[in-house]
Length: 124
Image 1 (tube, rainbow, N blue to C red):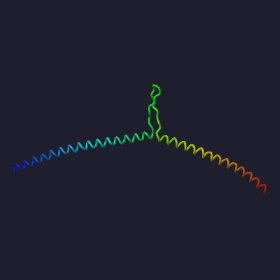
Image 2 (tube, rainbow, N blue to C red):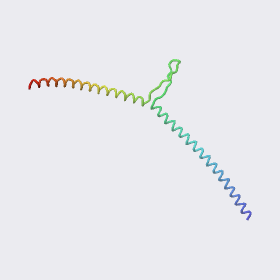
Image 3 (cartoon, one colour):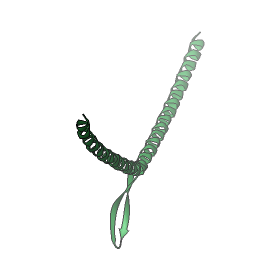
Image 4 (tube, rainbow, N blue to C red):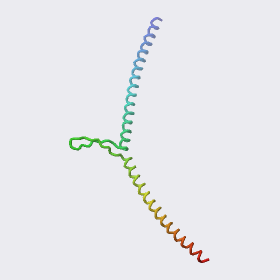
């Protein structure tokens, strides 16, 4: 009976040691997995920032003789915005021209109408 208890105790201790080693291995694997996930998230964020930077613009270094200067280059969002502003300015000009011509026509029309009003009085 004592041998049986001792064998159960040794099996229990072996299982406990095995469990502890497996737990350590799982913890190490989990830590490695978390580190890999953090790296991939950092890389993804870096790519997003680079894409946004390309859209907004970037700073480049321009060399003129022995001097180095930083120059801002507009990205596609700024160039699209400038194009849109030019389109709006052209539309505004055409609207102003049409409005001006309509006012001139209206002035001519009111002048003609006033001349007709005077003639109606004469006819009566």
